[in-house]
Image (cartoon, rainbow, N blue to C red):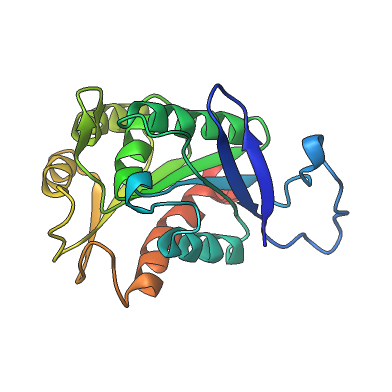
Length: 223
């Protein structure tokens, strides 16, 4: 089980911090607010799917990605949104979680699934400090100012490495406009033969996300 973290901000946002194994020569010290000091100098913030459709930080796709990242030596912060706010508050929650991570880690990546994929892309557009962003089956738009398609050019302009993973048989989310714009901008895309929920393909999802984020957040890559 990871450590519970309260994300500062005006909304009630709680998270689970999954920590990579400590190196054998590093002592496990308690950090601020009872949260252990980072075991890694890199972390990925993971945004869950739609909270009104039972989306939460324990989503199996988020957990699978987190497990793969931890195995690669990267911590992962999986958070729950505050009260539903049509995508606006949820984007604020993601930005606050990124701010929490940036205060504690040298390199921060961002990941999200479904609604969370849209939130991750929108948040990344305003966070040039990010080391990478990966969206899984992202919804194209949640509102006029929460638009994954419109966010992509800013992500490219910031030089943030990005990958979008999608299910080729997904008929749940409106993901095609994101893939079309990503292709125009030479943003990397990966299709998995699956529906929106990647039933039976969770391992493939974890691989597609972690194999992109882990190298992007590695010390050698950033240095």
